[in-house]
Image (cartoon, rainbow, N blue to C red):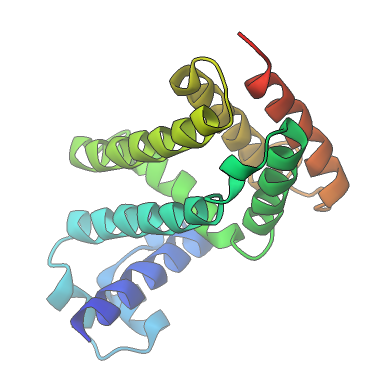
Length: 192
């Protein structure tokens, strides 16, 4: 029960961040949005920093869940298969998971001024890149760690551009996204 309540608060805090930015994130705003009794959020997360850290940790848990979906990929042996799976992930992130990734960018900006948050965000990002490197290694990529860094950065660039960048208003067209991810994975998996 307590873990469920913590997760509810963290996920609601991510919604508040996505909807109103870092300034909108208060304990009271989370209580209200989650329809919790006043003081619930501050009971579980005493400080704003603790609440922000909970957001980062929940984002990491959700990201690892996404990577668990990629577990069957080592059975695929070509870049096109990886490109299609990554296209599905990006389309989901640009549509049903849109708020989560807007909140991620809010947290990234907040981390510029909060070293304790930056450390948690960095640790999370490193763990994700390590897992992507494992998938790439299983698919035969040369320098999987280096290529994972590059691939994650490129995917994040596409995501940023489509969520808050110059193409934020563009329709989410799966085929356009898939053409991009197929090109990226062809490069990532080409022989060294």
